[in-house]
Amino acid sequence: MNTNRTIHLIEIPIAGKGGFIWNRLHTEREDICEALLKDAAPRFEERKQVLQTRLRRVDDALDRLMSGSYGNCSKCGGAIDDTRLDIDPALAL
Image (cartoon, rainbow, N blue to C red; front, side, top):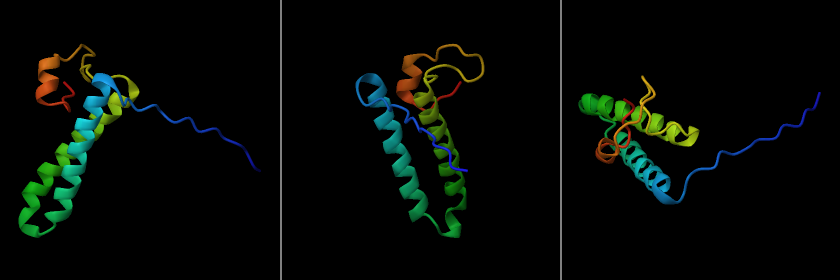
């Protein structure tokens, strides 16, 4: 049975503040992935765990940005202060 499916791509913000945040998070994501590839030796295990944790937080922030919930607390739904997001754009709480 052949069924046709339409796939709708999510529009990624590329202008304004959303675009700046997207670029900042995406650049950090690339830097983390590059560092993980370079630090493959066993002696970097602790650093690798820190990088993987940060990568998950950045990926989660990118997901929130695409879904439209970026800037809201994941726990209570309230707005996260812009000053805090400027310091760390991957904040979820």
